[in-house]
Amino acid sequence: MIKLILVAGLGSFIGGILRVIISFILNIKFDKTLHFPIGIMAVNIIGCFLIGVSFAYFKEKPQFGTLQYFLMTGISGGFTTFSTFSLETLQLFQNNEPMKAILYVFGSVLLGITACFLGSRIHF
Picture 1 (cartoon, rainbow, N blue to C red):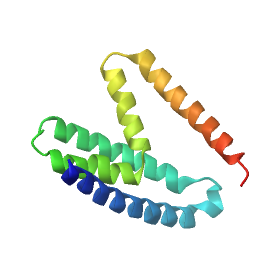
Picture 2 (picture 1 turned 90 degrees about the vertical axis):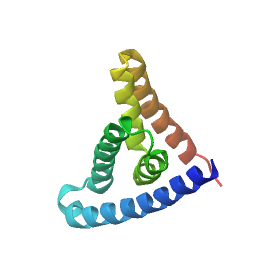
Picture 3 (picture 1 turned 90 degrees about the horizontal axis):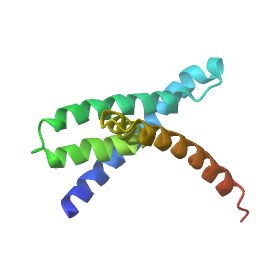
């Protein structure tokens, strides 16, 4: 268990650094013309693609547990938690549970925005 936590932590560290670098570069390059948070949007989409590839690969190779934690939980999770959210939504649809998937998407987004708003209203 400790080994998996450390492996995921190392991957998360690397993923977080990659998120900052990629987002920073894209925002500098495109923000003046787009006026849109393209960096984080791109990071989220790239992260979703990478966790999808990892999921497909490890689905057939369960013996790579440590590497799976490093790439999926660590790097993808540190890069963006949006990738895990997208994978879990996809899995709900694949398991023929569309109502749960829709509830998960709308609940996560609406409650997440509401929580962010409420948190921003706290005065210190």
